[in-house]
Image (cartoon, rainbow over all chains, first blue to last red; front, side, top):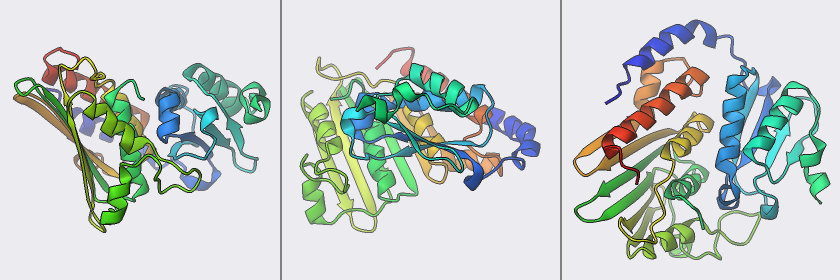
Length: 122
Length: 185
């Protein structure tokens, strides 16, 4: 059985770094819809793709958050990206692959991936 | 309908989160002797009155305001009952809610348990202020993950830190495989 001892080692290693972490306001928020509709449409792998992608690329000041149904179930999985001082961007019918593109182009590059936004789906 | 029981669990736990629970306990118990897979989700959220509770299994009832129906609980109920299993929900206003679904393990209609690690990591990482207890048992073997214990060990190191997530993923995968004796449920 794997034990939790390793966790203490991680803590000791990371302790010095955590104080540098920025909280709340000036960070980009990635909100993934995780109600019944979202989950059924495949929100869990999308959420995982965002969390893993952000972690792998070591991107700072980004929060991945879960939210309930926003009432547009036919467009799920829906992901809303809000960068500080910018308007909210709503991506629809997301997949893990599309999430990787959004991380690369929008989160890192600062360019909205228009082809996946709700405006181009309507 | 979902393809995995773990997706139902992810969905039902969202109700606990909406009910402002601070502690959510998820139990998955597989018993080959009684041929059952039991899922219990228990929270200390706002709970429901008897009237609300009686409506919770009705797909055309929901607490959300964006739409007029809520299929989470009815889906979970249907998924368990179609295997020949059973479903119970109990709640007390101000105390919390418990949902229990029993699936017949060998039923052809029982969907696989699926990826519980993904479900738990998504819950733990995006709800840092909520504590989760996960109990997984197969016959005589079991393991428990309690985020209160993890947070105590971690001190001021956040639980959603990538290094911690990587560790937790491996911890859950390894212990699940060991408890399952290499079998996939």
